[in-house]
Amino acid sequence: MEVQKKPIIGELRKLNVGGVATFPIEQRSSVIASISKLKKELMRQHWDAVRTDRLSEYKVDVTRIH
Image 1 (cartoon, rainbow, N blue to C red):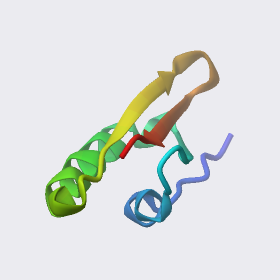
Image 2 (cartoon, rainbow, N blue to C red):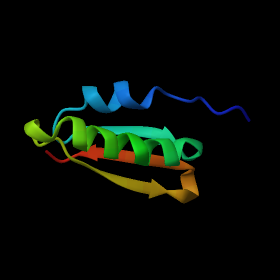
Image 3 (tube, rainbow, N blue to C red):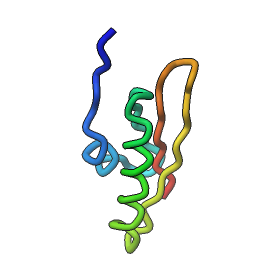
Image 4 (tube, one colour):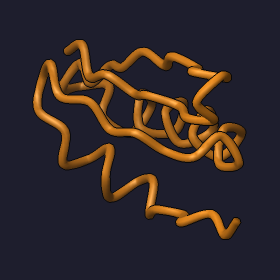
């Protein structure tokens, strides 16, 4: 089964507060790094998000919280 990878930074930048982006579990470490990067870059805008791993479904959800 081929995994459809998504552009992480672009997807996360587009999120509105309360929005959710879903990525394949294979991109988990990149998602973690991207969240950290955006928190620092967008600190003045108070950008923040939480990550939820759905291991049984092989997915990672990122929810923007601020």
